[in-house]
Amino acid sequence: MRVLITGGAGFIGSHITEELLLQNHQVAVVDNLSSGKKSQVPLEASFYQKDIRQKDLGEVFDEFRPDYVIHLAAQVSVSKSIQQPFHDCEENILATINVLESCVKHHVKKLVFASTAALYGDPQYLPIDEQHGMNPTSFYGLSKKIAESYIKMFAEYHGLTYTILRYANVYGMRQDAYGEAGVIAIFIEQLLSSQPLHIFGDGAQTRDFVFVKDVAKANVAALTRGENETINISTGQQTSLLTIINELRMITSEEVSPAFGHERRGDIRHSCLSNAKAKELLDWVPAYSLAEGLRATIHYYQQKAVV
Image (tube, rainbow, N blue to C red; front, side):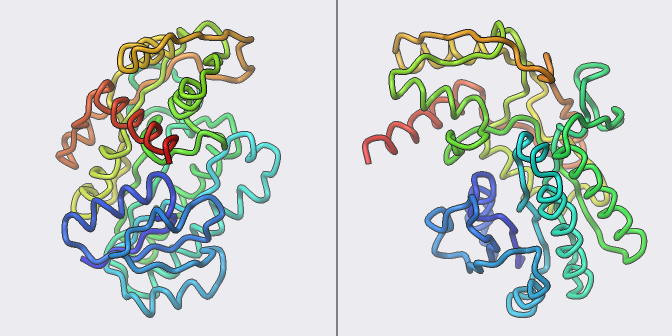
């Protein structure tokens, strides 16, 4: 297969690129490097430094001639989406429309789209399945919801096949702890620099933490399965921040000092996504336990600190 990945130089995209290459696919990465790093793109992949909002994106499609597109490039900061809603709209809605138009024009067989649990909003029940109502509490969640609607309408009008993947809380190697990163990356950086681990609230709040290599395998599985479906990618398990801290303590044998602060307004207390549909339609289940994923992530950050 010839697979084009937007945002392929980023945290999740670079792992998907590696997984595709392991399975002997031809891969091209499109990334403007606003947050991604070219050093994270394997040499075996073609690389195009280009902003997917620009109309000349079609030139990449003309040259690489992809059969499939995995669309990850996005503005992913919740706080930035609230501060700069127009920018969020450009990155997550208008850019997606540009990608969709290129897919249709160049007869792409299928689009796999990276969406988010953020569009569900406050859970009405747990675990959240794909039938749960969508009530996003940020412009980021709203823009992803609208992008999903455009994808479905392009499918209706143009026959474009798609799979939408709604990620839970992804963690792992290469996640940026200095931006609006996942809490695990932040905790590990704080731990390795002998800082207290900052917690907003009492630490009993829970999330569904899914390892990035498992997410990469789900994206590759979606290339040939789950046609015109929307599917959660998650572990289906709730894990508290205090549990994460305890796991870090056991793995590193370090003294871990949590620093508790005020709970942040608007934070969701508990979150967990059902992955039953992913098991059925993608034949996918997470291969990594939380402990295994954390060990691999810690090792990465330890090696990075040495360098």
